[in-house]
Length: 446
Image (cartoon, rainbow, N blue to C red):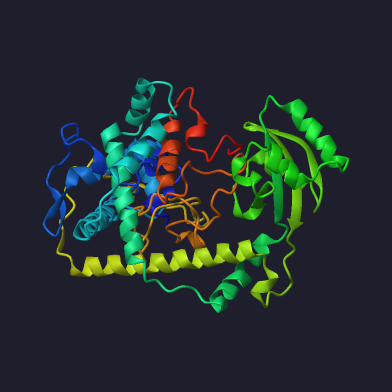
């Protein structure tokens, strides 16, 4: 059975999501005065900077709590099923801290700092999801953070992203031949993709929406003209309501379902989502060729997406190379694992079930080194990349208010840091939360 990285296994948990620098980021921000004492001592030093053993222990204990593995039996079984031991868990988390410290030292050496106003924007965006300061504080407490600690995570995420961009600035641009080769791999996933435009109305404007739809169906009103005149989606209205291809964007379910029933040129009825009323027109359908021999066979948007994937992958590789160089040059001392750790179990009592299939994790935004160790999330963006290697994300930018998922101000590379923390903190039971603060508009993003 393939070993499942501890960090990857936590991709869907709030602890992993809320920590802007990866699965152990929360423990990094823990108040020293409030941190419990386990065994004491120093787990490692990185160029003279100590990593306390208790910090590593607390990170692992937080992970166990988030996964519901606080009793010895369930924890031991999980370790066995995923080819772990207490020793290798410590090693993986400690390696994450080492790499995180190297990133910190790298940003300091490069003179990279975070823009306080940008940090404030993300914090206020998150706070806006809660109907009171008490609810916001309670949500943060549920994932082991204070607001100051959350702010520190955002700051570190922003400077780390700048470091990655600096290191990857000279990464090679992909050639057309490389784009074509990648496209030949991806093209089947685009088969059946649909491009669309929409007109968005407020939920209370059903009468007007129906009137506009009737005029479009009667040939009295051009769809693009209607979008420019009536759509509340200011992002797409100027382009005749164009929202691009569904395979390049995360469209809300109601929109996707309605679009799926349309052929090229068809116009939908009134489609209601949580953000308003849509009239949708399918403007194109892509049919993948049996053999892709030229980029001209692909829509320009697909070419751009694939090229962006390759650029991001090249930047990631450059970053990994930089980090490996830092490891080799650094004075890193790893101390032996002490006795009496709360996460220690005797693995002789837990047998591995070899009959299980390969274990994988989806949606992981943590950065890993070549050995599968979590380096930390060096950018606050959470977009998908080539086989999970993308740092900045390669999906199309949010193209329309009211259709695409995204974070407000997504043109800022770090917008998704707040978005990921939203998933973590909001999942703790926020009441009266408003999606508008993190969506590109009043639209229909899920």
